[in-house]
Length: 454
Ligand code: PFF
Image (cartoon, rainbow, N blue to C red; front, side):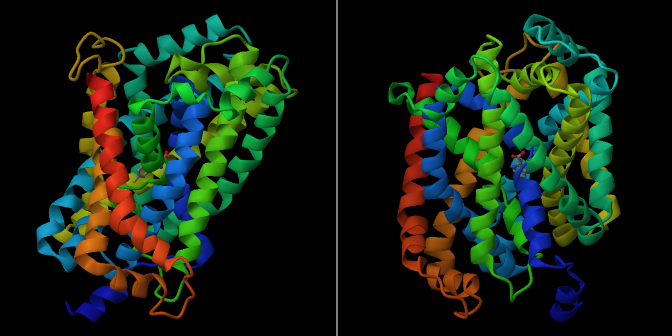
């Protein structure tokens, strides 16, 4: 097949809005609604939020633009994009595909929990503000040996169904309707949460940094969260960028996607942490935080039962639009490089990811005594290695690749549509990519690993 034909066949987003919504759909997911609030709660509240925002500015926007630029230039998947510029760098793309694979295997387990909570909401199972009862319900749900695996399977089937539909038929269509709805709901829940009696202490906890709480572990957690939440460091935005048309404005997309994503994370934090304080719950509780706190908030809202159903449904859709991007990274690689059909690639890969998710789910319940890394079972190890190791390293290597291998002149040429767009910050971007991002990530990574394990 000639190059030209190959290009013609590659699907593209139908409009910039379609792309922004789809990329925001990838970015906004369980990372914002489930992971961000509990990470903030475990890592000092406002201190974590402040470090997060600082790293977002230094590293988040920078790497977002880098990934989109590389993707659109090469029109290829995460590994092919590196290969096209330098064969020697293909392994960096491969690390990304591996990270996507690992993330989806536990992400889908949490997606399954959400489906379970949609059903619980529908049957009115959690119409109470009693935190002990809600905590017990969550605990017995996730530690059950069978039902979380069943829901994990359903989540994977939904994900693969959408990915089978391809880019326009699937990913774009769903994002357009559901993302805006999610913002409206989050906003309403946030309003209820911050007006609960006693909520102000939680608002302070979340917004006012206690600088003493910051250590290497907190900074690495925040860095990992920036990558996880923005879908960076594993080639996801390279892959999505490869579907963007040549005449569209990458600079604007690289700005709007992180802003939308951060808006969603802050709203989720403000919906959850003030309520945690109002109901006398522990902010450092961990992965159960959203599932235990929000039902209590709903019980204090007029039409809370209905609200709960709608909310968990939207969380499910947000999780799906992220999960499809994770699956798409791996599928796009296999289609481009191994020449598999979309159908075969999607079915086989989704099947394998499901299988890896099974022990991850069991590691929370029946296998909880079994640790891979110190104090981490299979689920936590997958989360740790992908989120805190592979994504930051992938981002660092991408910056080095752009700055020192592909070259910033080439990158800027692509990002500005051959110089047609005005990019006032091109000089700043160059310095960030060549020096600041790689060094900052390396320092945070080394310090974080030291304070996590030693
Ligand atoms: N950004 C997604 C979230 O916050 O839920 C998770 C994710 C999707 C991470 C895609 C990485 C990725 F490539």
